[in-house]
Length: 69
Image (cartoon, rainbow, N blue to C red):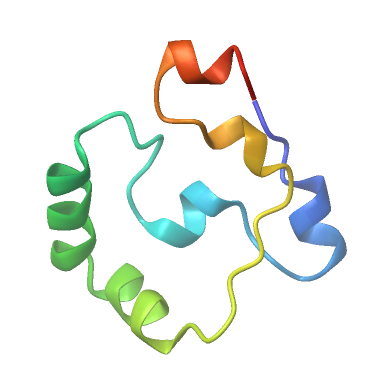
């Protein structure tokens, strides 16, 4: 689990917190629905010009894919 220390060091947040959809275990369609219903998250997404994801290998989509990250 990512601690968020890197995000804190640059005044940022974890990707889960930023995105507004928790751990992101649902389908992409369901996650998009969660964001649309979350006014703050939707505003963050629409105002974002640059999104930096540190240690992106942790975000592979399937267990099989994670073994190769």
